[in-house]
Image (cartoon, rainbow, N blue to C red; front, side, top):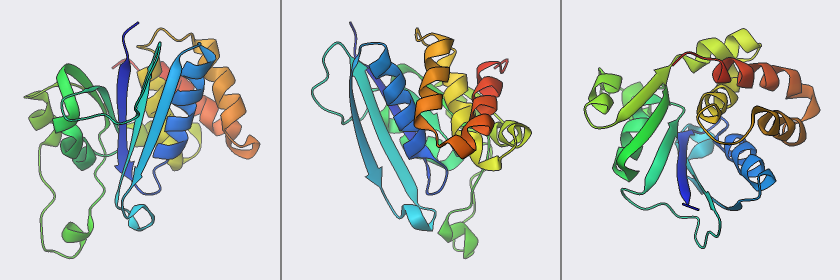
Length: 191
């Protein structure tokens, strides 16, 4: 059984840690060995947050090196660019087509790059969706993370029901309905 390497990237407050817990719990439920590693930057100030999720028959280290990620799940466009060197040849980027200005852009010291999705597509297979719009449709703009997990999940061998059961046991009850709807919208997305 091949080890699968997934890198989840975003900025502080986007729910990368909850997404990694949902993913990790779902694959544990399918009998895989799983290792998680969370790398926090200035996450409370909107800085980069990276989570590594590795699973397979036996996994020894949670770290995903340069050129090793099978999937980069990016909650923001610039974070997808930053993670690109970690993607393996033939890997896939699933990205929320949303930009969140980092501090240098906010202060006017830099400009946010243009045409990021097109530039990413020159180097990798990319699925880009407006996960923010789907999260709002689900009832909460903060559910972007679960929309993207849903989109990724439909391309795995893990059954839909396992994902739903995992969300029910991982997400706090007061946010459960929104997150189930967000997952379903991502899962049923045509991209």
